[in-house]
Image (cartoon, rainbow, N blue to C red):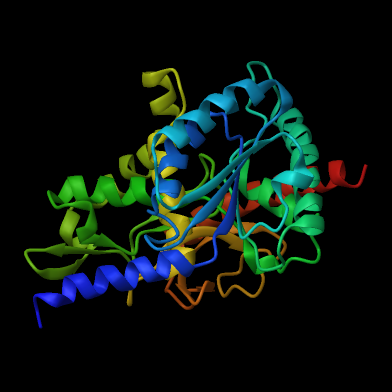
Length: 351
């Protein structure tokens, strides 16, 4: 019977993918370079499952439509069995219609000489429009991931502009920072990155974020060891480790003359796959979510990165982790930046 099991499983899979209803996934900024690294993984089944057919909706601004046509051709040329349809568009009513998952990558990038305030103003306009379109056209069960920066505040604006969609359905990407932190610890300990778990990114996806390894574990020769004991270098963990993770995006831009795309796309896949399929038992990951009801004294009306566990497509904050004075100061500093961003953005929103 053992010989027939693989055959049996493949028949079950075929039956499943034959019958499973396609889900509709929209990616905004779809002609950009993060999307270029991301779309193949989604269409191939790395995110929503190997048996889940997909309709990909690619949304971008009108000048990018010719580029989008090229992306559509390439997706067609990948000949991916799960990809049922690709819809390029510059219209939100097409882009967000009956959507199951929305990955909002497109945003106004910071141009030279641009004040942060101007950047916020431009992005408030974009995410107000997209939030309203989600509210009007998307499924109420839609899971929305905001990637475009400033991601936390853009996510807050989108959610506030979509009052009929539960606030818990909105999150922003800090998984890239989380992965960066895990990888730094793994390299330092000479282990592979899957041997590191439960690092935390607190706060804003900006240079004030706080990568925290006080609760992280490293599997060294089969034994789970607290990260501080595994690394054995407190000075590094409280100094260069933190600044390396905080400034990694800028370091990549300096080296590549382009922002992180491959690693951002990978983090988006990790984030969405965990929402869809849940986190492993005893592990938590970082994502920007509503701070409402948190046990860490973070102001409520913010999208702030916390440690979360996910089950049945629902995240739950990991509560009650002990916080020392060093961590407290860093967590409060990034919260203060988010409060300031939020207040500026809400001023623009009400105009």
